View 1 (cartoon, rainbow, N blue to C red):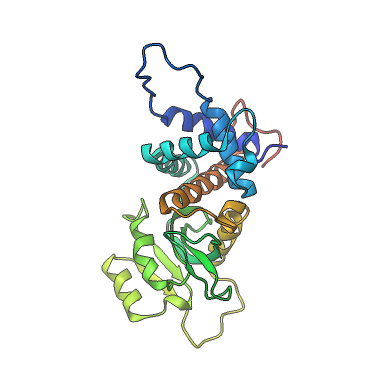
View 2 (cartoon, helix red, strand yellow; view 1 turned 90 degrees about the horizontal axis):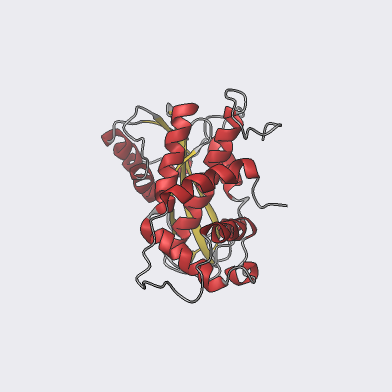
Length: 274
């Protein structure tokens, strides 16, 4: 059984392959060992993301763990995954439309047992090493931007970098936040950006009726379906960003295929709504 449905992963691979830079072979005769095809490496990185295992566990006769890590680092340096994320967002906005009138931002703490550049003492896991993800989503729960930080960072200082990471911050929007962001500094920061704020007040019980923030909780649950983010053993910030962005692209394309299923027809359209 594939790690990701073919109706989702095949469009991602087609665009990913188009973004890969041309590789130059300096030796006129090439080398004695052929290069592992990019598609094999791509499929195995998808398995690493979904199952959360080490590259050595996924490696086999077709591709070694060293090749997986080297090719991943090549793609990080080339900025392929960031370009893919921008294209996925643009495609969703063009075909379905981003619901940017309401944007919700929240954080989620996961485990980072190996420490690293963006790991810190987790306040919810007895001081063990943890990772915090600050996520911004639109009104439909589509992830717009995600940044990583140590688990012991407070949520409110991450608001600015999260808003800076938004590629669509020039549109009018209302930002929905929980009571952890309820401060004068947060309101001043949003006002300086020309954004309207809906912040839960401290010391008051939450309303029974669901507000506009539940979509970000659902998106965090979607992200936690990828075990590489739940139990992150990576130490370098660039590699962690790669896995976060990779999972975000899969979520965006999955929602695009689901929403487009009832609006469009195409040759590889799945028989059932995904």
